Length: 144
Image (cartoon, rainbow, N blue to C red):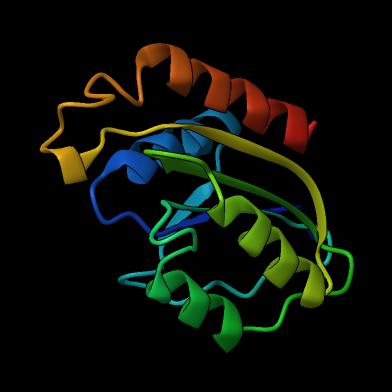
């Protein structure tokens, strides 16, 4: 069976969606928006990228629900990514959830996102093309 690559994400403002699309394009991954679709059946040889914004130092409720609703194969290769306005605190939470489900988290990536809480005045040019290029490189490194 061929290895599949999934980019599972939640994005309330569109920032994380931009990064998810860049990652997906770089490695030919299937994109899954957990706000609309369930987590896919992931096989032991597959790779899963999990990304979200940061909401009160945590991932979104949609991501929590999606990750709790589906089992992952023991040792499946995973990487986390996200966007942030202050600090990417959601990444550690995502890593912990994935590790508790048996995934092997191999890397993480974060970049600023446009800060919608300040009416877009802070970080308004993010994620920038440089951020998206770095996300593509991150994805290629993880998939190998």
